[in-house]
Image 1 (cartoon, rainbow, N blue to C red):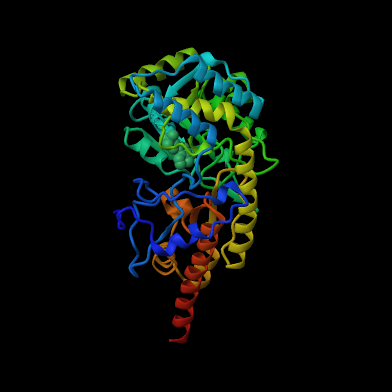
Image 2 (image 1 turned 120 degrees about the vertical axis):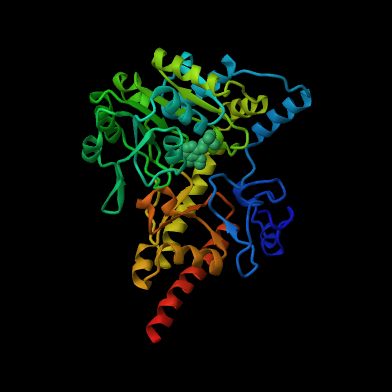
Length: 422
Ligand SMILES: Cc1ncc(COP(=O)(O)O)c(C=O)c1O
């Protein structure tokens, strides 16, 4: 699908020339030509225009210098044999959690996995039986659906509800969908795509249900470190000993430090029996091996990049302020997310006013605006009327995205006006 042979288009290259160096996050390197999903796996639209990709959840920023330096040193060593997750590797993660979340992780409870989704899939395969029910809370990160269904488990939905515009877990409904075949709850915490960072009180109620019904909880905490100022993240394992005993908590440095292409995950499993079943499953699936570069990058990130993450979060705070303001002015409201670098744009008012459906909205964005977002309906039927935007890019490209959003909205409105005149 790569349509420009790795060359950045003339249209977009002007932004690189006009970079404002006042924040490190405006100096985005050219990524086209590095076989990235975001920039190289990108069709032109029907007008022959390069679309601006704001969908896949990685960042355009260079990852922090200490990570690059550590990788350089490792590459200079020039030998890349079989490697394993050492005690020092575990300690980097443990220390980060202590410093950032006041969470004490016992290093003996940590399991390496080559990514969060391999860990989630392994938990489903190894800790449930075919036909068992696994509950998710859509709209939610769409690979969760396939991870359950592909493995012959039964998908059960407990949709999030919006109360005064804010998404919440419907815990009464959760209790009502649990049956004797329910074995596992798959939690997204913080929640992609709606950006909620669940409070301790919410997690306590959720945990209480899991404990009373004897369910395993897989808590995907990959977005834990990207939060708006003043928002606190609560690790599920830290909610209490009863829930810790039944939790598989999945963390990774990939989102926070922009190293998704160097896959690694830290899976915290306090219960020794669950842990050994999980480890056996990883082995059975061939997920035992760790990339030496991924291990080195992860250690450097957790050891030396705290201030970089603080600056990054400050940058996102400001960008989300702008997005909320500018999207609302276009008639596309968005609730400022508490976590993640993903915005959940609400096209329902415009769809209602113009009669456009999801497909017409997608066409307006892609063909008229030249903007490629993640369609809300991918995240479950509850995502209909929404589009997810990834704002982890420079202000110049963000400005471009807002301009394109405006063009798409104008196209939707023009369709309605033309219809009204006929
Ligand atoms: C909630 C969530 N879980 C997992 C992943 C993917 O993790 P990994 O690349 O480590 O498999 C993502 C990536 O967007 C995500 O948003």
